[in-house]
Image (cartoon, rainbow, N blue to C red; front, side, top):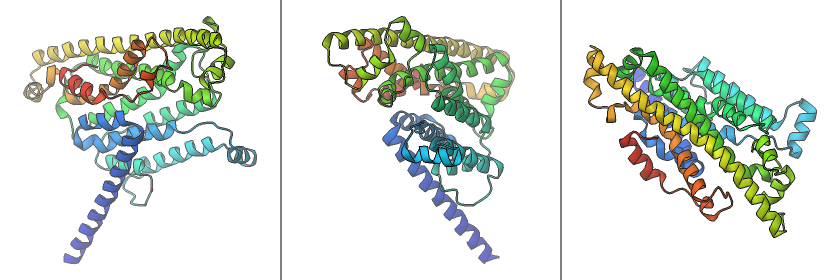
Length: 368
């Protein structure tokens, strides 16, 4: 009996070490490559924090998958009918299937992100594999078909990617063992349910537009266009000119000046659409705040009445904190506007230092 207890404790200690190592690895990944998520993770309730950083790490790893035609990729495609990107997407689909189908399997899966997700499932936290699949499908389609006809197409891409991550985080924080009072709150109102979902959707679409602007130079270096084709046509900016401008191959000053002015007009229209989504999200957050107060005033549920006084500005943490992923996009859009939508401006090349303070302030003020 004593021996079995010692073995059980040893296995438990070994498992906790695996989780600790995975957490350290993912945190280091975010700290070095997605500092915004690293900072915002501190606002997530601790029982869900590992899963949150795993979701953000998942986003980071999938966004590294590109359709570059390298020698190895071309050879693999010709011999097996699969590209390197195909293989990477298949890897993630397979590993998700493994952890969702049999989360209690102790086999070494090796991938730190998957280890943290599996642990979340073991601890009965809400994670829906459907959101992961939608994200992978949308991203795979993007890798295979980079161009967007309109800004609305970028918004659709955002719904299939960033919004899915937002829904994942929202569901995660609404796990019964984290937020029973807020689950009751949402059960009182389908209006509130709809508002919470809509806010996550609008933030995801704004994030997608911001990411396409931010990543323009990177994609242009690969001879890929992420700006809407209709806006490029409207402002008479050709793909070739954009490539040459971004890659520093335009030498004539008048051509550079004209191309930068055309690009600024395109980015202005894109940023306006992104900002419209942020404004809509803010409006819906205001309506959600009012709806929560109305529920509190009209319900006899003791748990809601008891917890309401702990909700800053009348909005529970588990509803608000998933919306905080929109703050980095707001900061970037504001910086873009301040620099007259000149993506080559020196200020836009500097790292964002305001997120720590802005996130702290917005958390207490309940602002996106």
